[in-house]
Length: 196
Image (cartoon, rainbow, N blue to C red; front, top):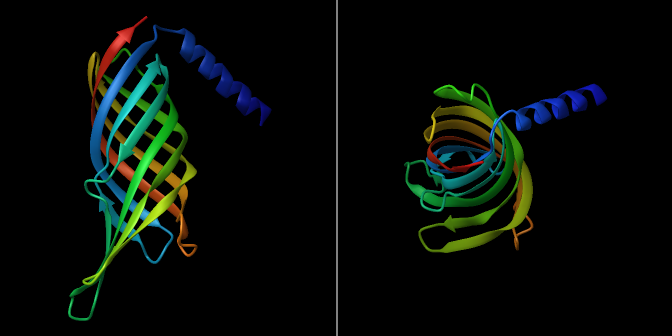
């Protein structure tokens, strides 16, 4: 265990001292898939929209804020005649801090890996033909990891696949407390703001 920690710290040290540091801004959107451990809420899709701010060289520290409020997860229940009985919408808001290690940074195409932790909140809308009930979700902690490729130098195109895990809990309904996993595939566009 100590050897692994030493190797990780050595890699971080080498990455952080080898080149100039820069600030980087990215906006992105894509598609997200749910795997919620609650009432068969799996395999629904949503569209996240977000922004990332990163600082560093080969090793970058970043903040990632996103929401799927415009197109949330939808879980639909139907009767035997395939008529919709009710629908549940899950909106998620995320704020993640992460560490990103970029490889082949001087090339046109640079693969990278990322990992970190975040906080998650949102709401669940339970919709039926007669009524809509909205349940707020508490602010909970979680973690995330993934990887992707960065294409370009000053202006960049980013393709990334990431996995997220948290435990979503209702503010008011004690029955809503479930382990939550979701993944997202995003396409981003970024620009280098400044270097030093």
